Image (cartoon, rainbow, N blue to C red; front, side, top):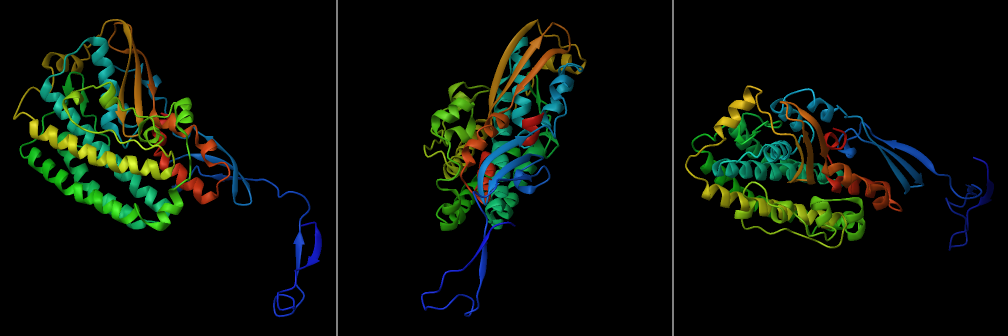
Length: 400
């Protein structure tokens, strides 16, 4: 390093530092240089295959560039090459932590353009599946974010409690992650005997577990220092970036599609939409924890009111789809659902054949990732990790 060498200042006792020996330091001329480093694309704190090009001045983040595309699989183009039914499994792989909502958004689009009526019993099963999946998704987020912040216990607790959620989803559809449960006009199959009782028992089990999560973090001094005032996103900027879901509600945007544009039979349930106004990591944490409680309320109502039996799918529609004879009339629709990360929209264009002419997905994660550079400028590297984790993105949802 080139610079001017000068002695260290004398101590208050009148001697020089380091036991009286003369110690020198190197003072580099001018402003410290900006250093560019890569975080990812293979890195646990990026929560997926995401590459961040970080410009650092010392430990201060000057700028961040998000490099995407490592998980791009051309899902939207693949939709045009198969029948309507054949695209359902692809939706599971986009946001693989919220496959039920992905199924739902696509099936809702097809049902809208084809004017398909869904039996009430099937709507109850759809709501139950989505809310169990919402809690399971939030548990993955909270557990992995806990690791980012050094709270390893939170990861073990969340994954412990998520096991029963996955067991319930497996009873519904036979899978634990990529479900392919939704069908045009209903769902793939009915729930087995004893499902209602087991699900209600899990809801009763989860309520004190959510309190337990909060006992570890909500008033923890270290957690507060790591999240309060970190990663701020004001309300007007959240709206400008198109941020949705818990991330937007943490910035004061009081909007939830389940309440404001209800689908399935969400209008029949009584639940609150948690909103915070601080717009920091802590606010987003509070919103998601409270959302788990609200999902428990919805599940309890849905399971209690669930009829003993009923048609779980519109029979004629299901049979036509199986035989690839489902041909919606020509038209164009846009439908959207409340994914655990925010608004998941599907633009569907039908040309009257048994294959979609065009499918365009509006993912929640991509919009929620966009303001990251603005949120972390001037912070330190650990704050960047905390802020990125608080966005709860899924890279399969970003890239598709």
